[in-house]
Image (cartoon, rainbow, N blue to C red; front, side):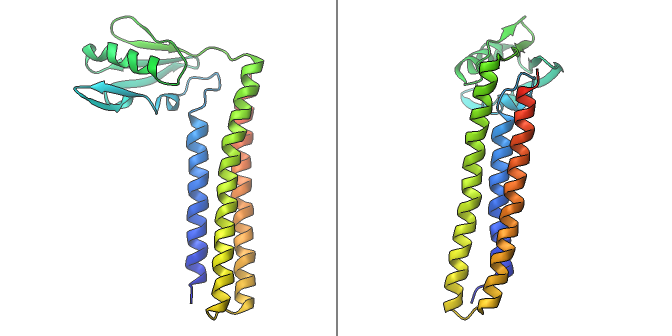
Length: 186
């Protein structure tokens, strides 16, 4: 016989993972404001191995339209520039020999709409994952009836599962709304 509380706990953890995935993905989308998270995926060749940018340089945001990257080793400046150019960041770095600057351009209206669509696609993936979790757990509960779980307990568990589902879908919607607002703000 399955433990209903543990099963619902598992569902909540999986839904939370979907929400964390969405947050992480939305943080990487450039919305016209400087955000160091857009550089999270950049890997730099340093002493023969590929390491995250933040392990070879100090990354900061001196103003809302600029990201400053100060390498700890000046010799790494070329490697950092190359890594940024090769990544999907889409910004050309400028360097003065000591600091690399990324000037974040103001996105056009069309670009903003594209970014909003991109966010909504990622959001839909996360919502589908939450729905899949609900479906999986419902199946488990249905099978548990055959193993001796009472129908009343199963119905109560399904109600709790639905509440959990609704809570996470609302959370995902709120994240998307906030990101879309950030993107569309000039």
